[in-house]
Structure formats: structure tokens, C-alpha cells
Image 1 (spheres, rainbow, N blue to C red):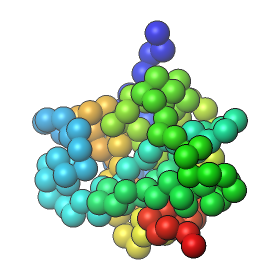
Image 2: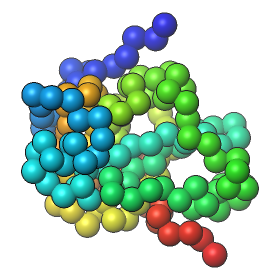
Image 3: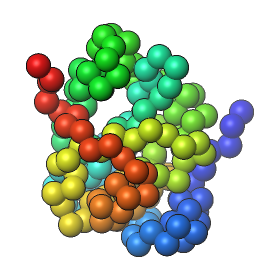
Length: 162
């Protein structure tokens, strides 16, 4: 079994790469976007989710506002494949590739380098909150730092391509 990374590992990554931000350790778990937003008193739009998808021969991490679903057709269009070939990564693949359990995945600091797609709506905020490595942690960041450290491709993940 693979040992999961945690908030301390994320903190070490942030210090190593001089990423400004703060890991918030919460009193209770935040298993959903709504629970996370309520716990810290912000809009669910400011809670950013990092979701791993698989496409043939690779995996791709999407980073988007928590109140919107990622449109698989946007990913399919980018890879020039059928929408049906874009799959949500199963929990064991998420753990293997990122090092973090589903529901705790931060936007960076993963065990493996991942191609990252960032929805432009995330960049409209001065401050966002993302998975902090455990179910009791969130990381507060400037979204531009996510774009810079991951070298993310900015792509509309919520609108169906024509």
C-alpha cells in the first residue's frame, strides 16, 4: 500500500519552492466544497478543486472553482479524443500519481509531475482555498502562484466546446 502525503509534505513543498500561502488546519473535516466554504466563511467559488482525469496514455489534473463541474468535452477537445475516453481517475490512481487521497489533493506538490489545466475563473480571485493534503486542511493561496508553479495551461473547463 502507498503511504499518502499530507499537509506537512505540502508545507515542505511550499517552503522549498518559496510559494507564499498558508495551510489552515480545521477543527472538522471538509469532505465537500460546501463544507469547506462554510468552515472558513467564503463562497464556494473560492474553494478550488483539483480533480484528476485519465485520458489514453496519460493523466491530467484540472483545477477549477468548486461550484462548477468540469466539462469532460473541454478535456476531450484539447486531446482530440471522444468525451467517453476522458475518465475520472479512480481513488487508487489519484493516490499513486499525486500521493494524496481523493478529497485532499492540493493543486501542486504531487508525487509525480502532472499536466495541469487551470480554468480561467480561478484566476479572477485574489485569494483561493484548495486541498491542503488532509481532510482537515486547506491551503490559502494566490491563484497566480498555482499557474506559475504548475505551468498550467489556462483553458475553459466549464463551457462545452462547439
